[in-house]
Image (cartoon, rainbow, N blue to C red; front, side, top):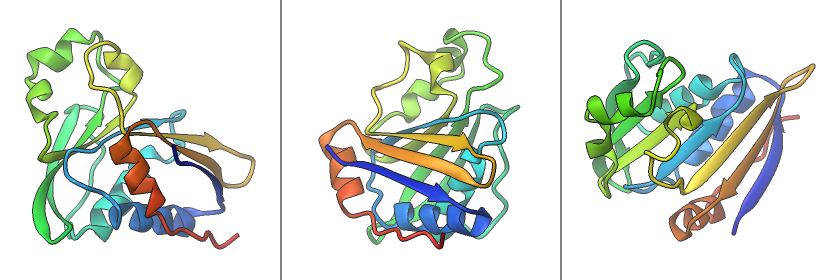
Length: 161
């Protein structure tokens, strides 16, 4: 399985990684984002969305738990769900909100704080860990399925360090 580590010196590097990821996504992929508050999980998601054609604002779904978008993936309009589960008190909230229905082969799901819904979420295709460094960020991407492996095998990212 593909495993990729890199450093992001600044916001421009985060945007470049998001753009690279946007070009290798496929429908139905589930991505877990891990990292402390302020690590750049939403910034990376915003970069993916803008690179995939979303022209509007991308707000953090911290209070709404989820924000839906439509983007272009492999020449087709695809639903993209951005989840931020930080404020969830229990995994049952995810089910009660009907979010489980979004987990399907047509929708790309990016989930911040997935540990808040442990046991409820489907297994990820890709896990991304973002760690805050004294200067910049350290990022690790791991494929955990064939779909995730195919995505990361296409990743073409060369940070400007």
